Length: 564
Image (cartoon, one colour):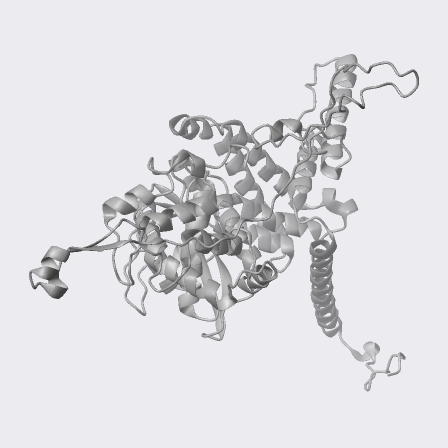
Protein backbone atom coordinates (compact mmCIF):
# COMPACT_ATOMS: atom_id res chain seq x y z
CA UNK A 1 0.00 0.00 0.00
CA UNK A 2 1.19 3.52 -0.81
CA UNK A 3 1.68 5.98 2.05
CA UNK A 4 0.91 8.95 -0.21
CA UNK A 5 -2.27 10.89 0.56
CA UNK A 6 -4.87 10.62 -2.15
CA UNK A 7 -6.32 13.79 -3.59
CA UNK A 8 -10.03 14.31 -2.98
CA UNK A 9 -12.19 13.33 -5.93
CA UNK A 10 -14.09 16.59 -5.74
CA UNK A 11 -12.58 20.02 -5.11
CA UNK A 12 -14.59 22.63 -3.26
CA UNK A 13 -14.43 26.28 -4.28
CA UNK A 14 -14.79 28.12 -0.96
CA UNK A 15 -15.18 31.47 -2.73
CA UNK A 16 -18.55 30.38 -4.09
CA UNK A 17 -19.89 29.35 -0.65
CA UNK A 18 -21.97 31.65 1.52
CA UNK A 19 -20.98 32.58 5.07
CA UNK A 20 -23.69 30.31 6.44
CA UNK A 21 -22.40 27.34 4.42
CA UNK A 22 -18.84 28.03 5.55
CA UNK A 23 -19.86 28.20 9.22
CA UNK A 24 -21.87 25.00 8.88
CA UNK A 25 -18.95 23.23 7.18
CA UNK A 26 -16.52 24.47 9.85
CA UNK A 27 -18.75 23.26 12.69
CA UNK A 28 -19.17 19.86 11.04
CA UNK A 29 -15.41 19.51 10.57
CA UNK A 30 -14.75 20.71 14.14
CA UNK A 31 -17.23 18.15 15.52
CA UNK A 32 -15.64 15.32 13.55
CA UNK A 33 -12.18 16.31 14.76
CA UNK A 34 -13.39 16.47 18.37
CA UNK A 35 -14.99 13.02 18.09
CA UNK A 36 -11.85 11.59 16.50
CA UNK A 37 -9.67 13.16 19.21
CA UNK A 38 -11.92 11.75 21.94
CA UNK A 39 -11.72 8.29 20.37
CA UNK A 40 -7.93 8.54 20.12
CA UNK A 41 -7.71 9.59 23.78
CA UNK A 42 -9.92 6.69 24.80
CA UNK A 43 -7.81 4.18 22.86
CA UNK A 44 -4.68 5.69 24.41
CA UNK A 45 -6.23 5.30 27.88
CA UNK A 46 -7.01 1.65 27.18
CA UNK A 47 -3.47 1.07 25.92
CA UNK A 48 -1.83 2.68 28.96
CA UNK A 49 -4.10 0.77 31.32
CA UNK A 50 -3.40 -2.54 29.56
CA UNK A 51 0.33 -1.86 29.79
CA UNK A 52 -0.01 -1.02 33.49
CA UNK A 53 -1.95 -4.21 34.14
CA UNK A 54 0.58 -6.25 32.21
CA UNK A 55 3.83 -4.78 33.55
CA UNK A 56 2.86 -2.61 36.54
CA UNK A 57 2.10 -3.48 40.14
CA UNK A 58 -1.24 -5.18 40.73
CA UNK A 59 -1.56 -3.67 44.22
CA UNK A 60 -3.21 -0.28 44.72
CA UNK A 61 -1.33 0.44 47.97
CA UNK A 62 1.32 2.55 46.30
CA UNK A 63 -1.34 4.61 44.52
CA UNK A 64 -3.20 5.05 47.78
CA UNK A 65 -0.12 6.38 49.56
CA UNK A 66 0.59 8.77 46.73
CA UNK A 67 -2.98 10.01 47.00
CA UNK A 68 -2.28 10.84 50.62
CA UNK A 69 0.60 12.95 49.37
CA UNK A 70 -1.88 14.73 47.11
CA UNK A 71 -3.73 16.01 50.15
CA UNK A 72 -0.54 17.63 51.40
CA UNK A 73 0.08 19.12 47.96
CA UNK A 74 -3.48 20.47 47.82
CA UNK A 75 -2.75 22.53 50.91
CA UNK A 76 -4.89 20.73 53.48
CA UNK A 77 -2.05 21.03 56.03
CA UNK A 78 -1.00 24.60 55.26
CA UNK A 79 -0.37 26.76 58.37
CA UNK A 80 -2.78 29.53 59.30
CA UNK A 81 -2.35 33.05 57.96
CA UNK A 82 -1.18 34.50 61.28
CA UNK A 83 1.70 32.03 61.58
CA UNK A 84 5.21 33.49 61.61
CA UNK A 85 7.75 32.79 58.88
CA UNK A 86 9.81 30.57 61.19
CA UNK A 87 6.77 28.43 62.06
CA UNK A 88 5.88 28.18 58.38
CA UNK A 89 9.40 26.98 57.53
CA UNK A 90 9.34 24.41 60.35
CA UNK A 91 5.91 23.18 59.30
CA UNK A 92 7.05 22.96 55.70
CA UNK A 93 10.11 20.91 56.72
CA UNK A 94 7.93 18.53 58.75
CA UNK A 95 5.55 18.13 55.81
CA UNK A 96 8.43 17.47 53.44
CA UNK A 97 9.83 14.82 55.81
CA UNK A 98 6.45 13.14 56.05
CA UNK A 99 5.99 13.31 52.27
CA UNK A 100 9.46 11.79 51.84
CA UNK A 101 8.53 8.94 54.17
CA UNK A 102 5.32 8.31 52.25
CA UNK A 103 7.16 8.38 48.92
CA UNK A 104 9.70 5.87 50.22
CA UNK A 105 6.90 3.55 51.34
CA UNK A 106 5.11 3.97 48.01
CA UNK A 107 8.22 3.25 45.97
CA UNK A 108 9.55 0.47 48.23
CA UNK A 109 12.78 2.33 49.03
CA UNK A 110 12.16 2.59 52.78
CA UNK A 111 14.26 0.62 55.25
CA UNK A 112 12.08 -2.28 56.28
CA UNK A 113 12.34 -4.27 59.46
CA UNK A 114 14.11 -7.45 58.42
CA UNK A 115 14.09 -9.29 61.72
CA UNK A 116 11.67 -11.95 60.53
CA UNK A 117 12.61 -11.91 56.84
CA UNK A 118 15.86 -13.87 57.13
CA UNK A 119 16.55 -17.47 58.18
CA UNK A 120 14.07 -19.37 60.34
CA UNK A 121 13.89 -17.77 63.76
CA UNK A 122 15.03 -20.11 66.54
CA UNK A 123 11.94 -19.35 68.60
CA UNK A 124 9.81 -20.95 65.86
CA UNK A 125 11.60 -24.27 66.44
CA UNK A 126 11.02 -24.50 70.19
CA UNK A 127 7.63 -26.24 69.91
CA UNK A 128 8.87 -29.00 67.60
CA UNK A 129 10.10 -32.44 68.54
CA UNK A 130 13.88 -32.49 69.09
CA UNK A 131 16.24 -35.32 68.26
CA UNK A 132 19.60 -34.82 69.96
CA UNK A 133 22.76 -36.04 68.23
CA UNK A 134 25.77 -35.61 70.55
CA UNK A 135 29.40 -35.67 69.48
CA UNK A 136 32.01 -36.32 72.17
CA UNK A 137 35.58 -37.56 72.08
CA UNK A 138 36.28 -40.93 73.63
CA UNK A 139 38.60 -41.10 76.64
CA UNK A 140 41.45 -42.33 74.44
CA UNK A 141 41.01 -39.32 72.10
CA UNK A 142 40.97 -36.75 74.92
CA UNK A 143 44.77 -36.30 74.67
CA UNK A 144 46.64 -33.26 73.32
CA UNK A 145 48.46 -34.24 70.09
CA UNK A 146 51.26 -31.72 70.84
CA UNK A 147 52.29 -32.38 74.43
CA UNK A 148 50.28 -35.49 75.31
CA UNK A 149 48.45 -33.77 78.18
CA UNK A 150 44.78 -34.49 78.97
CA UNK A 151 42.03 -32.41 77.27
CA UNK A 152 39.39 -30.71 79.39
CA UNK A 153 35.82 -29.87 78.24
CA UNK A 154 35.14 -26.10 78.14
CA UNK A 155 31.51 -26.19 76.94
CA UNK A 156 29.44 -27.25 73.97
CA UNK A 157 28.34 -25.75 70.65
CA UNK A 158 24.75 -26.30 69.58
CA UNK A 159 23.59 -26.09 65.96
CA UNK A 160 19.98 -26.77 64.93
CA UNK A 161 18.69 -28.15 61.63
CA UNK A 162 15.06 -28.41 60.60
CA UNK A 163 14.38 -31.93 59.29
CA UNK A 164 11.27 -33.02 57.39
CA UNK A 165 10.59 -36.75 57.22
CA UNK A 166 8.50 -38.20 54.35
CA UNK A 167 4.96 -39.31 55.29
CA UNK A 168 4.53 -42.75 56.76
CA UNK A 169 2.35 -45.02 54.60
CA UNK A 170 1.24 -48.36 55.95
CA UNK A 171 -1.68 -50.78 55.94
CA UNK A 172 -3.68 -51.23 59.13
CA UNK A 173 -5.33 -54.65 59.44
CA UNK A 174 -8.37 -55.01 61.70
CA UNK A 175 -8.50 -58.66 62.76
CA UNK A 176 -11.94 -59.31 64.17
CA UNK A 177 -12.56 -62.37 66.31
CA UNK A 178 -16.01 -63.85 65.79
CA UNK A 179 -17.91 -65.72 68.52
CA UNK A 180 -20.84 -68.11 68.43
CA UNK A 181 -22.80 -69.88 71.17
CA UNK A 182 -22.38 -73.66 70.76
CA UNK A 183 -25.19 -74.37 73.22
CA UNK A 184 -27.67 -72.57 70.94
CA UNK A 185 -26.38 -74.60 68.01
CA UNK A 186 -26.72 -77.82 70.02
CA UNK A 187 -30.31 -76.94 70.92
CA UNK A 188 -31.16 -76.88 67.21
CA UNK A 189 -31.33 -73.11 66.64
CA UNK A 190 -28.75 -73.31 63.85
CA UNK A 191 -28.57 -69.93 61.99
CA UNK A 192 -30.34 -68.20 64.92
CA UNK A 193 -27.55 -69.06 67.32
CA UNK A 194 -26.09 -66.18 69.34
CA UNK A 195 -23.33 -64.55 67.32
CA UNK A 196 -20.99 -61.68 68.36
CA UNK A 197 -17.99 -59.71 67.05
CA UNK A 198 -15.59 -57.60 69.09
CA UNK A 199 -15.72 -53.80 68.60
CA UNK A 200 -13.66 -53.05 65.48
CA UNK A 201 -14.41 -49.63 63.86
CA UNK A 202 -16.70 -49.57 60.83
CA UNK A 203 -15.17 -48.78 57.43
CA UNK A 204 -15.40 -45.26 56.00
CA UNK A 205 -16.86 -46.64 52.76
CA UNK A 206 -18.13 -50.19 52.66
CA UNK A 207 -16.16 -52.54 50.38
CA UNK A 208 -13.31 -50.03 50.20
CA UNK A 209 -9.87 -50.27 51.87
CA UNK A 210 -9.49 -46.50 52.23
CA UNK A 211 -9.04 -44.93 55.68
CA UNK A 212 -10.13 -41.44 56.85
CA UNK A 213 -6.51 -40.23 56.82
CA UNK A 214 -6.11 -41.20 53.15
CA UNK A 215 -9.27 -39.40 52.02
CA UNK A 216 -8.37 -36.39 54.17
CA UNK A 217 -4.90 -36.22 52.63
CA UNK A 218 -6.31 -36.12 49.09
CA UNK A 219 -8.95 -33.49 49.92
CA UNK A 220 -6.45 -31.34 51.82
CA UNK A 221 -3.89 -31.32 49.02
CA UNK A 222 -6.51 -30.65 46.36
CA UNK A 223 -8.60 -27.95 48.07
CA UNK A 224 -6.16 -26.40 50.53
CA UNK A 225 -2.91 -26.66 48.54
CA UNK A 226 -4.48 -26.45 45.03
CA UNK A 227 -2.82 -29.63 43.74
CA UNK A 228 -4.84 -31.27 40.92
CA UNK A 229 -5.77 -34.91 41.49
CA UNK A 230 -3.83 -35.91 38.38
CA UNK A 231 -0.59 -34.45 39.77
CA UNK A 232 -1.32 -35.88 43.20
CA UNK A 233 -1.91 -39.39 41.80
CA UNK A 234 1.45 -39.24 40.01
CA UNK A 235 3.15 -38.25 43.26
CA UNK A 236 1.49 -41.17 45.06
CA UNK A 237 2.71 -43.49 42.30
CA UNK A 238 6.29 -42.28 42.74
CA UNK A 239 6.00 -43.14 46.43
CA UNK A 240 4.68 -46.62 45.61
CA UNK A 241 1.14 -45.86 46.84
CA UNK A 242 -1.50 -47.56 44.62
CA UNK A 243 -3.97 -44.64 44.40
CA UNK A 244 -5.24 -43.39 41.04
CA UNK A 245 -6.87 -40.15 39.96
CA UNK A 246 -10.22 -41.95 39.66
CA UNK A 247 -9.88 -43.18 43.26
CA UNK A 248 -9.28 -39.64 44.51
CA UNK A 249 -12.24 -38.23 42.56
CA UNK A 250 -14.61 -40.95 43.72
CA UNK A 251 -13.57 -40.82 47.39
CA UNK A 252 -13.76 -37.03 47.58
CA UNK A 253 -17.22 -36.94 45.99
CA UNK A 254 -18.49 -39.67 48.31
CA UNK A 255 -17.04 -37.89 51.35
CA UNK A 256 -18.57 -34.58 50.25
CA UNK A 257 -22.02 -36.12 49.79
CA UNK A 258 -22.16 -38.31 52.91
CA UNK A 259 -20.12 -36.51 55.56
CA UNK A 260 -19.63 -32.85 54.67
CA UNK A 261 -22.81 -31.84 52.82
CA UNK A 262 -24.93 -32.06 56.03
CA UNK A 263 -22.39 -29.86 57.85
CA UNK A 264 -22.43 -27.30 55.02
CA UNK A 265 -26.25 -27.24 55.05
CA UNK A 266 -26.17 -26.53 58.78
CA UNK A 267 -23.58 -23.78 58.25
CA UNK A 268 -25.85 -22.27 55.60
CA UNK A 269 -28.75 -22.12 58.05
CA UNK A 270 -26.55 -20.29 60.55
CA UNK A 271 -25.28 -17.88 57.88
CA UNK A 272 -28.84 -17.00 56.82
CA UNK A 273 -29.46 -15.75 60.36
CA UNK A 274 -26.57 -13.25 60.33
CA UNK A 275 -27.21 -9.49 60.31
CA UNK A 276 -24.71 -8.93 57.48
CA UNK A 277 -22.99 -11.17 54.92
CA UNK A 278 -20.49 -10.69 52.08
CA UNK A 279 -21.12 -11.99 48.54
CA UNK A 280 -19.09 -12.40 45.39
CA UNK A 281 -18.99 -14.71 42.39
CA UNK A 282 -16.43 -16.10 39.94
CA UNK A 283 -16.65 -18.25 36.84
CA UNK A 284 -15.90 -21.94 36.50
CA UNK A 285 -15.99 -24.39 33.60
CA UNK A 286 -17.98 -27.62 33.57
CA UNK A 287 -17.28 -29.89 30.59
CA UNK A 288 -20.72 -31.51 30.83
CA UNK A 289 -22.44 -28.13 30.25
CA UNK A 290 -19.95 -26.92 27.65
CA UNK A 291 -20.49 -23.36 28.89
CA UNK A 292 -19.25 -21.00 31.57
CA UNK A 293 -20.82 -21.59 34.98
CA UNK A 294 -20.36 -19.69 38.22
CA UNK A 295 -19.43 -20.25 41.85
CA UNK A 296 -21.11 -17.89 44.30
CA UNK A 297 -19.36 -17.15 47.57
CA UNK A 298 -21.09 -16.10 50.80
CA UNK A 299 -19.26 -15.33 54.04
CA UNK A 300 -19.93 -13.92 57.46
CA UNK A 301 -18.94 -10.29 58.00
CA UNK A 302 -15.74 -9.18 59.74
CA UNK A 303 -17.57 -8.66 63.04
CA UNK A 304 -18.30 -12.37 63.37
CA UNK A 305 -15.11 -13.57 65.05
CA UNK A 306 -16.66 -16.41 67.09
CA UNK A 307 -17.60 -18.66 64.16
CA UNK A 308 -16.66 -17.33 60.69
CA UNK A 309 -18.35 -19.16 57.81
CA UNK A 310 -17.23 -19.40 54.17
CA UNK A 311 -19.65 -21.05 51.74
CA UNK A 312 -19.33 -21.82 48.02
CA UNK A 313 -22.41 -22.41 45.88
CA UNK A 314 -22.37 -23.79 42.33
CA UNK A 315 -24.81 -22.23 39.85
CA UNK A 316 -25.24 -22.39 36.07
CA UNK A 317 -25.06 -18.59 35.75
CA UNK A 318 -25.08 -15.25 37.53
CA UNK A 319 -28.50 -13.98 36.51
CA UNK A 320 -31.29 -12.52 38.62
CA UNK A 321 -32.69 -16.04 39.14
CA UNK A 322 -29.31 -17.33 40.35
CA UNK A 323 -28.93 -14.43 42.78
CA UNK A 324 -32.42 -15.13 44.16
CA UNK A 325 -31.58 -18.83 44.59
CA UNK A 326 -28.32 -18.09 46.41
CA UNK A 327 -29.82 -15.44 48.71
CA UNK A 328 -33.13 -17.25 49.28
CA UNK A 329 -34.23 -17.04 52.90
CA UNK A 330 -31.88 -14.20 53.83
CA UNK A 331 -33.05 -10.88 55.29
CA UNK A 332 -30.28 -8.42 56.06
CA UNK A 333 -27.32 -6.47 54.70
CA UNK A 334 -25.39 -7.87 51.73
CA UNK A 335 -21.93 -6.42 51.12
CA UNK A 336 -21.30 -6.74 47.37
CA UNK A 337 -19.83 -5.13 44.27
CA UNK A 338 -21.79 -3.15 41.67
CA UNK A 339 -23.12 -6.17 39.75
CA UNK A 340 -26.73 -5.48 38.74
CA UNK A 341 -28.33 -8.67 40.05
CA UNK A 342 -27.88 -7.53 43.65
CA UNK A 343 -30.13 -4.57 42.84
CA UNK A 344 -32.58 -6.32 40.51
CA UNK A 345 -33.64 -8.76 43.25
CA UNK A 346 -35.09 -5.80 45.18
CA UNK A 347 -37.91 -5.67 42.61
CA UNK A 348 -40.38 -8.25 41.39
CA UNK A 349 -39.13 -10.31 38.44
CA UNK A 350 -41.65 -9.66 35.65
CA UNK A 351 -40.79 -12.87 33.78
CA UNK A 352 -40.87 -15.34 36.67
CA UNK A 353 -43.08 -13.21 38.97
CA UNK A 354 -40.60 -13.84 41.79
CA UNK A 355 -41.32 -11.35 44.60
CA UNK A 356 -38.92 -8.61 45.70
CA UNK A 357 -36.33 -9.77 48.22
CA UNK A 358 -35.93 -8.19 51.64
CA UNK A 359 -32.19 -7.51 51.52
CA UNK A 360 -30.11 -4.33 51.74
CA UNK A 361 -27.11 -4.25 49.37
CA UNK A 362 -24.09 -2.31 50.67
CA UNK A 363 -21.54 -1.00 48.17
CA UNK A 364 -17.87 -1.90 48.33
CA UNK A 365 -15.83 1.30 48.33
CA UNK A 366 -12.70 -0.61 47.28
CA UNK A 367 -14.40 -1.31 43.95
CA UNK A 368 -15.22 2.39 43.67
CA UNK A 369 -11.60 3.32 44.36
CA UNK A 370 -10.39 0.72 41.88
CA UNK A 371 -12.29 2.46 39.07
CA UNK A 372 -10.61 5.79 39.82
CA UNK A 373 -7.20 4.14 40.17
CA UNK A 374 -7.66 2.62 36.70
CA UNK A 375 -8.60 6.06 35.40
CA UNK A 376 -5.43 7.45 36.95
CA UNK A 377 -3.22 4.71 35.50
CA UNK A 378 -4.55 5.45 32.03
CA UNK A 379 -2.85 8.88 32.21
CA UNK A 380 0.95 9.49 32.09
CA UNK A 381 2.31 9.63 35.64
CA UNK A 382 3.71 13.14 35.23
CA UNK A 383 0.17 14.39 34.53
CA UNK A 384 -1.56 12.74 37.49
CA UNK A 385 -1.75 16.00 39.42
CA UNK A 386 -3.70 17.61 36.57
CA UNK A 387 -6.53 15.04 36.63
CA UNK A 388 -9.72 14.95 38.65
CA UNK A 389 -9.10 11.26 39.39
CA UNK A 390 -6.02 12.29 41.41
CA UNK A 391 -8.06 14.21 43.97
CA UNK A 392 -10.89 11.64 43.87
CA UNK A 393 -8.53 8.84 44.97
CA UNK A 394 -7.08 11.15 47.64
CA UNK A 395 -10.58 11.70 49.03
CA UNK A 396 -11.26 7.95 48.97
CA UNK A 397 -7.98 7.26 50.77
CA UNK A 398 -9.01 9.75 53.43
CA UNK A 399 -12.30 7.84 53.87
CA UNK A 400 -10.45 4.56 54.47
CA UNK A 401 -7.97 6.24 56.81
CA UNK A 402 -10.76 7.65 59.00
CA UNK A 403 -12.56 4.30 59.18
CA UNK A 404 -9.35 2.43 60.04
CA UNK A 405 -8.84 4.64 63.08
CA UNK A 406 -12.10 3.37 64.65
CA UNK A 407 -11.62 -0.24 63.59
CA UNK A 408 -11.35 -1.63 67.13
CA UNK A 409 -14.32 0.25 68.59
CA UNK A 410 -17.49 -1.57 69.59
CA UNK A 411 -20.23 -1.68 66.95
CA UNK A 412 -22.34 0.88 68.79
CA UNK A 413 -19.35 3.22 69.15
CA UNK A 414 -18.35 2.61 65.56
CA UNK A 415 -21.79 3.62 64.29
CA UNK A 416 -21.76 6.80 66.38
CA UNK A 417 -18.19 7.79 65.43
CA UNK A 418 -18.83 7.21 61.74
CA UNK A 419 -21.50 9.92 61.77
CA UNK A 420 -18.74 12.47 62.37
CA UNK A 421 -15.66 12.79 60.16
CA UNK A 422 -16.39 9.72 58.03
CA UNK A 423 -19.90 10.87 57.10
CA UNK A 424 -18.61 14.30 56.05
CA UNK A 425 -15.75 12.71 54.06
CA UNK A 426 -18.20 10.46 52.20
CA UNK A 427 -20.52 13.37 51.43
CA UNK A 428 -17.55 15.45 50.29
CA UNK A 429 -16.42 12.69 47.91
CA UNK A 430 -19.82 12.19 46.28
CA UNK A 431 -20.43 15.95 46.05
CA UNK A 432 -17.05 16.32 44.35
CA UNK A 433 -17.60 13.63 41.69
CA UNK A 434 -21.16 14.86 41.13
CA UNK A 435 -19.74 18.25 40.21
CA UNK A 436 -17.01 16.61 38.09
CA UNK A 437 -19.59 14.61 36.13
CA UNK A 438 -20.57 17.70 34.10
CA UNK A 439 -16.96 18.35 33.08
CA UNK A 440 -15.94 14.80 32.10
CA UNK A 441 -16.73 12.71 29.05
CA UNK A 442 -18.79 9.64 29.93
CA UNK A 443 -16.80 7.50 27.46
CA UNK A 444 -13.47 8.07 29.25
CA UNK A 445 -12.15 5.98 32.12
CA UNK A 446 -12.67 8.89 34.48
CA UNK A 447 -16.22 9.42 33.26
CA UNK A 448 -17.02 5.73 33.68
CA UNK A 449 -15.53 5.77 37.19
CA UNK A 450 -17.75 8.70 38.14
CA UNK A 451 -20.85 6.98 36.73
CA UNK A 452 -20.03 3.77 38.61
CA UNK A 453 -19.46 5.63 41.89
CA UNK A 454 -22.67 7.66 41.66
CA UNK A 455 -24.65 4.49 40.94
CA UNK A 456 -23.27 3.06 44.20
CA UNK A 457 -23.94 6.15 46.33
CA UNK A 458 -27.22 4.99 47.88
CA UNK A 459 -25.77 1.58 48.73
CA UNK A 460 -22.56 3.14 50.04
CA UNK A 461 -24.40 5.43 52.47
CA UNK A 462 -26.03 2.37 54.10
CA UNK A 463 -22.71 1.97 55.87
CA UNK A 464 -23.94 4.43 58.51
CA UNK A 465 -27.00 2.33 59.41
CA UNK A 466 -25.10 -0.38 61.30
CA UNK A 467 -21.68 -0.48 62.95
CA UNK A 468 -21.18 -4.10 61.87
CA UNK A 469 -20.88 -3.13 58.19
CA UNK A 470 -17.55 -2.70 56.41
CA UNK A 471 -16.28 -0.26 53.80
CA UNK A 472 -15.11 -3.10 51.57
CA UNK A 473 -16.02 -6.56 50.35
CA UNK A 474 -12.56 -7.95 51.04
CA UNK A 475 -13.92 -10.81 53.13
CA UNK A 476 -15.66 -12.33 50.10
CA UNK A 477 -12.83 -11.50 47.70
CA UNK A 478 -10.27 -13.22 49.95
CA UNK A 479 -12.56 -16.26 50.01
CA UNK A 480 -12.85 -16.31 46.21
CA UNK A 481 -9.06 -16.29 45.78
CA UNK A 482 -8.38 -19.94 46.82
CA UNK A 483 -10.98 -21.10 44.30
CA UNK A 484 -9.41 -18.99 41.54
CA UNK A 485 -5.94 -20.42 42.27
CA UNK A 486 -7.34 -23.94 42.24
CA UNK A 487 -9.17 -23.23 38.97
CA UNK A 488 -5.91 -22.19 37.31
CA UNK A 489 -4.34 -25.52 38.29
CA UNK A 490 -7.26 -27.90 37.81
CA UNK A 491 -8.83 -25.99 34.87
CA UNK A 492 -12.34 -27.48 34.98
CA UNK A 493 -14.84 -29.97 36.42
CA UNK A 494 -16.15 -32.78 34.26
CA UNK A 495 -19.68 -32.89 35.69
CA UNK A 496 -22.08 -30.67 37.63
CA UNK A 497 -22.05 -33.23 40.42
CA UNK A 498 -18.28 -32.85 40.64
CA UNK A 499 -18.58 -29.05 40.69
CA UNK A 500 -21.12 -29.23 43.53
CA UNK A 501 -18.87 -31.62 45.49
CA UNK A 502 -15.95 -29.21 44.99
CA UNK A 503 -18.02 -26.35 46.43
CA UNK A 504 -18.93 -28.45 49.47
CA UNK A 505 -15.30 -29.35 50.13
CA UNK A 506 -14.10 -25.78 49.56
CA UNK A 507 -16.71 -24.62 52.09
CA UNK A 508 -15.46 -27.08 54.71
CA UNK A 509 -11.76 -26.41 54.08
CA UNK A 510 -11.98 -22.61 54.08
CA UNK A 511 -14.32 -22.49 57.08
CA UNK A 512 -11.95 -24.77 59.01
CA UNK A 513 -9.04 -22.47 58.11
CA UNK A 514 -10.88 -19.38 59.33
CA UNK A 515 -11.71 -21.11 62.61
CA UNK A 516 -8.05 -21.86 63.28
CA UNK A 517 -8.07 -25.62 62.67
CA UNK A 518 -5.52 -27.97 61.17
CA UNK A 519 -7.52 -28.75 58.02
CA UNK A 520 -6.16 -32.22 57.35
CA UNK A 521 -6.70 -33.36 60.96
CA UNK A 522 -10.19 -31.83 61.05
CA UNK A 523 -11.25 -33.63 57.85
CA UNK A 524 -9.92 -36.92 59.22
CA UNK A 525 -11.65 -36.36 62.58
CA UNK A 526 -15.04 -35.68 60.96
CA UNK A 527 -14.85 -38.80 58.78
CA UNK A 528 -13.62 -40.92 61.68
CA UNK A 529 -16.70 -39.83 63.65
CA UNK A 530 -18.99 -40.62 60.70
CA UNK A 531 -17.73 -44.12 59.90
CA UNK A 532 -20.29 -46.52 58.49
CA UNK A 533 -22.75 -43.96 57.14
CA UNK A 534 -24.20 -45.29 53.92
CA UNK A 535 -25.41 -43.41 50.86
CA UNK A 536 -28.69 -41.61 51.57
CA UNK A 537 -28.38 -42.03 55.33
CA UNK A 538 -28.77 -38.80 57.33
CA UNK A 539 -26.53 -37.63 60.14
CA UNK A 540 -28.54 -36.58 63.24
CA UNK A 541 -28.63 -32.82 63.91
CA UNK A 542 -27.15 -33.28 67.38
CA UNK A 543 -24.14 -35.02 65.86
CA UNK A 544 -23.72 -32.34 63.15
CA UNK A 545 -23.56 -29.64 65.83
CA UNK A 546 -20.73 -31.53 67.52
CA UNK A 547 -18.82 -31.67 64.21
CA UNK A 548 -18.96 -27.92 63.45
CA UNK A 549 -15.55 -26.19 63.13
CA UNK A 550 -16.04 -24.29 66.41
CA UNK A 551 -17.41 -27.23 68.39
CA UNK A 552 -16.03 -27.81 71.89
CA UNK A 553 -15.84 -31.52 71.02
CA UNK A 554 -12.88 -30.90 68.68
CA UNK A 555 -9.64 -32.21 70.27
CA UNK A 556 -6.93 -29.68 71.08
CA UNK A 557 -4.43 -31.30 68.72
CA UNK A 558 -6.68 -30.37 65.75
CA UNK A 559 -6.47 -26.68 66.60
CA UNK A 560 -3.69 -25.11 64.54
CA UNK A 561 -0.91 -23.11 66.27
CA UNK A 562 -1.67 -19.40 66.67
CA UNK A 563 1.20 -18.42 64.35
CA UNK A 564 -0.25 -20.37 61.38
